[in-house]
Length: 407
Image 1 (tube, helix red, strand yellow):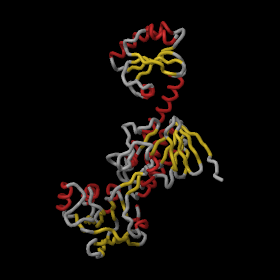
Image 2 (cartoon, rainbow, N blue to C red):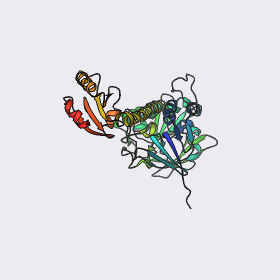
Image 3 (spheres, helix red, strand yellow):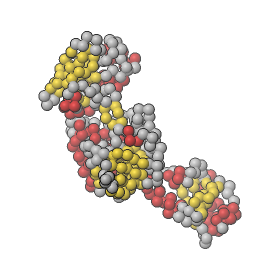
Image 4 (cartoon, rainbow, N blue to C red):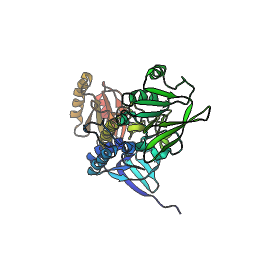
């Protein structure tokens, strides 16, 4: 017999506990929204595997990824954010109330923030899992370049990211060795990057090779490459191997739920809004230029603030817009035409004040309410009767028509 799932209700449910999700939680928790953060593995996400973070503002001496993420988590808990260590099995964003389902629970929420992050594509070579992240295999040159100053390093891949990151690493490393799957002279990167890399005296290429296995003790010491033509093994003694063979966003459960790129990244606007009202996405799960803790924090701040705004406007919409019969004047206070129309609305208000109210909605700072009313242009007069918008009039409205509809 299947166990009945427990149902819990929240204002905000955050899926994923990396830097973006934690920041969103700090903002929504501080706004006194009932907030739940669900993380299936380690709170802090990929940043926790980075031994040194030297480019996050406020830490001139640098910090560890785990230490920084622990501070994020502590701050979120300070503002009342609840944490649940489990995996999300499915979501339903079709209704006004969003559904997030785990193995044991069903969470109902007014807002969902997707912060499920991503995972680097790996080679699948022998012993790879032993040395992932802080034990010799890295996926971030920006993070680990300085710690490899004066050392030889290995790069797997020849796409734009691999070659550009390799060029960056030459500023620190003694030698940057690149394993390329193709014949000599062929790469997956653009021609300009290819020419610059081939001309760089600190870059060395091992053609027609793939990784066969990783070797070492507690830390990586040697990478064994295999020549695809001769099957010969090539030993590359390095303390760090950078893998730049792609990135996979954790978005499988959002297929057919959210608009995504052909590579599976969630599409958002500048407010971190997805195509579904009340659903936001932040951090590495989105299609963005730079994936770093600092950029994820910015995303999370925007989404957390937007969530509070969305919930407040939703309550206003139900209580003040649809909650009573009357007129809603939608305008932009910065536009002269709207201000002229406001004078006419004030006249109407004096005539109607005994029987119906006039509510003003200024869209100068936010279009949240006007979007809910499906009003794209202003000024507009929306007539509400019986909990519904029955008609929308333009700036040259007839006061008698308004009174007639509301009669």
